[in-house]
Length: 256
Image (tube, rainbow, N blue to C red):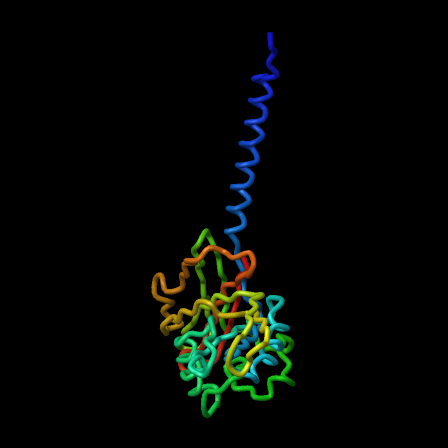
């Protein structure tokens, strides 16, 4: 008669081990989606690049930006504008919202018109960006402290102004992704393979509020709607600005 190798104890032990692994994986996943970041004591530099895959002079600026923002000391943001799209190549990262933002910054940046590549450092137009030094060294003491906390798909910001903070504050959220590659098949960059980092994929302005009264309830919450893409790591950035000048007063990014 055939004998069986089945042992209930072995099966029970295996199931218990599997349950333990499943529980550990759930705890690990939960821990990975719960994290926080706090701004520095000094003002974090904010670098905005307005760029396009259809612009032949933009790739050097894209490469320059890729060298920035590797750590928490710089918030780097690549806004791909859409006004190049009609000139032979449609940039898959471009948005009319980013074009509008570029136009809106003219009032405070010192730029006379919109152009690409345009670099703003702490809200100021910097056509000399190839020689610009971007670092938090010797930066001014921040008048605003920002803390970001992620729990699941929700990111919450706590903005704490000091007595020296501007009377009115505003802000914007920007979700960025790293490591994108595009093979351009038309336009000024036809035949080129372009690499992009710090690409803004989601941009949401926050309306101005009184720094004395505090931000409106719910205004500083951000819901992540898309699943994380392991091929393109993302960061959630919050930039707080002086509502009257448009210049950044503090920024922080969350990389989990």
